[in-house]
Length: 85
Image: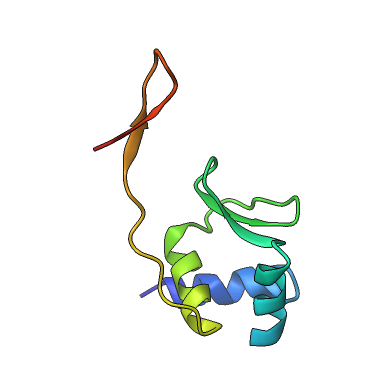
């Protein structure tokens, strides 16, 4: 499984060295799941190739419950609303 390695790369990229660092970044809303871009966001950075699987691994690693699978949806071209598939 590539996700734990990818999560480790993400932590190295932003110099997050411990669970406490990651948890405090999540609590301060610096590290979040960007719903619009469908990837992780740390501060103002949204690096490519760090998606839902990495978010799940990070949540488990800091002791949070594993988020449910992301619900797939499409955007309506008329009203711009989200329509679940």
